[in-house]
Length: 263
Image 1 (cartoon, rainbow, N blue to C red):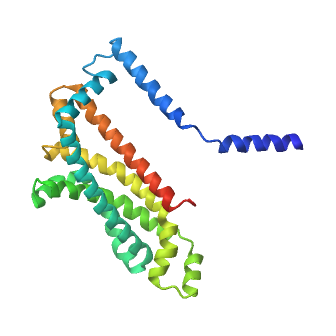
Image 2: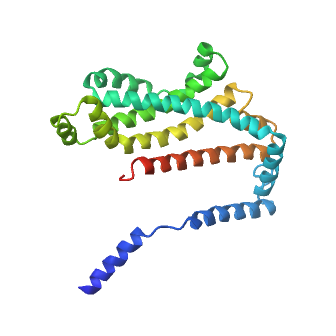
Image 3: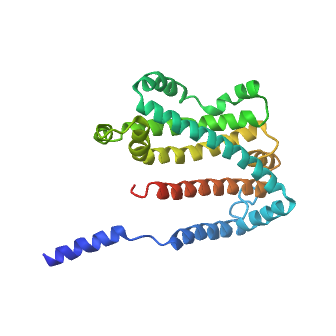
């Protein structure tokens, strides 16, 4: 009996054991070293896959010249504004639809009928309506962010325990307090799931919009150097996009941990 208890304890300790941070760093370093070896042995021509060292040299040159800053700031401006607008409206409308049966009956069919449309296909129409400037690109990003956030938000509201809502109403809470103290905390895990999904979608739409209708931005830069077959600078843009995605994801994870530590 004691032996079985010890085995169970060891298994639980193994499952709860945290993986050290350096494990992820070692994995990434291993990939970079292997990549450098493959390119240095010319197994893959540098035109198709430049070495990490060559990409770093090209990236440093773009930083010194100011080219990378200019394109990065243009992209950050678009994605921050577009993401903020889409996420804000998505959360507000998702809460209303989840809380109100009338709003659910009216709005939900509209959302599900528009959601399957590839958002980038609407960019030419937005350019026609809003012009080729920043407004059309910010709008397409906002629209792409809106749908995963609104769908996850009202799904989260629907999944809140109805007994908790009835208990709050029974004890005299008004609609605002019910939403603020019961529904919103209960829906937060689903809301953050939508925000994380929307972060990836926003990057995809940003790059697509910049490739189609922008003179500045990471997407425009990647397309430009792809046309010129300068793959080192092209890969700088790809790595910057990868870092942006990582930063957004980690930032949302940190915010989720702060707001809903019980999740």
